[in-house]
Image (cartoon, rainbow, N blue to C red; front, side, top):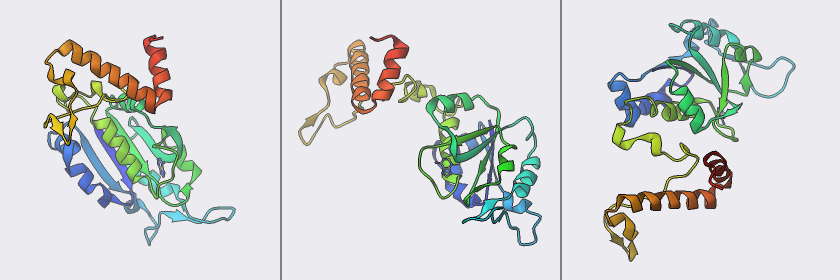
Length: 231
Ligand code: ADE
């Protein structure tokens, strides 16, 4: 999988692309990430990428030209899935992450300022928001997308740490986990987990997952019931 990111703050991606699971996936050439500073594509002598809005009003608007120039400089940009991150987009989800993990080439534009020139929107296929709050810019949103998507790409996570059991993958939150010590400040690990009985452990985990989802996320629990016909 290849992801090109158009940003005005390339340094924000340095730690993100060199550490942890993504750093390893890049080293192992399973994922390729290119960070492109689209200010370099401004034809303005001061490298300006924004301007005041037509019709007046506060704030600045991201100009279409530098974005367009940067976009067409990317090899294979026509075929790539082009995503704009914006609070006005469709809300990101685990389901969307699965869908996008099958795409070979993705381009993500991170905006700043008050907004995008509307003609930028026409250059992109999809607008995604990571939630109902406003960030200073799209970089953190792009990182959220990249993190959630790339960990689902085959071979990024080893089979024994499979994401198939992640929260949300079956509309349930994960069950509680424990590791050594078996007792901490009087709090004991549930007996069943030490029993060695795999069938009972599986049943306990499902029961706890359902209980936790029902307590914390009624919306998800209803979806689980509907999709698993667990009336
Ligand atoms: N840019 C600013 N806020 C955002 C959000 N919530 N989602 C995606 N991009 C954004």
